[in-house]
Image (tube, rainbow, N blue to C red):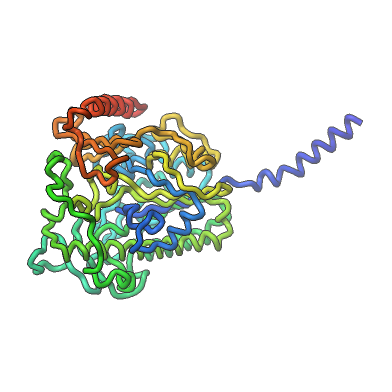
Length: 476
């Protein structure tokens, strides 16, 4: 009798083996925009710029309201979350690959590649110059070891046929449409596929069709709404005429209580943008966001058609935020919330939709997604595993978010009540302190108030501790 039971058990085990073998780890679809502020998305409260495709993803996933990048411009931000190390750990404070600093250590996509996933990059994931690198169709600061395959999406950028205007440094209107990191609006002729992001979406759709039968980590990098603000003409129509668009509130003497280092590198003043040009800049940015949203929708629809939507973790984010005239600041680099904060939406199969107000950082994505997919989480990673938040969105893993602005030698520590900004490690270039609970727009710097001296001292000590922690790593 014992022999019969043993045989039956062995047979049952053989019968179960194919089912176990057929089980498959979740796929990952990582979608990243370039220079996108959460304030431009309707799922984050924008009432003028409608983003229905991103909104649908948010309604089916977890939308994080207090997610922060770890550096406020493209190169160091992307190098950080892709490598799993903070910028001051690797020394990548500019536009280079993290590979020389991390040696043979696996990047986030490489970790999945090593685990048997098909990994592909479409367009800008690591740093890539915009518009220059897009015009050339070059790889930028990409890391070949991260990918099974990689694809670029060249486009005409500011040279696209259409109606264009240079808004920055052009007070007399005589400057032609120009390239570079310049505020230019182009209401372009032609359809979505004329431009880089349309080609990126088409390639991503193709890859989802081709690789649905194997585990995949597909990274889709859109370059809008990064300047130039170029999109097919129809995406501009909801924002015309531009003069109807509102500007953020103007605060008299807004810069008087902040250090010089805290004034952003692009302002209405040094860009010589009058009110008309400021409103057109917002309209151009919103049109680029609407175009981006349409491309995201194509990729998500292809995922649904692939039959893998219920087994795919979908992530949507940006490399950092963006100013659209708040404090008369424009673009990135600033450590204020508009620039340091990012949209972050994550849909995990089997998890309920939610809004999570806990502090998280982009560097947390690597360990979190590895855990959710059942992969080993390397102990060396400097991000935190936030996977428990998908079961309990009220859970807190961090009490403070940390971000840097290398160009201004600035650092941000952001908790529930305070935003602390310090310029230079010894604070020699100034300090800002905002009570974000009472002053969410960060209008009044309290750093010099005697009653806040203890708060400032505590944050200075906490920042010093954080930098020591960041630099205490396994890198050479």
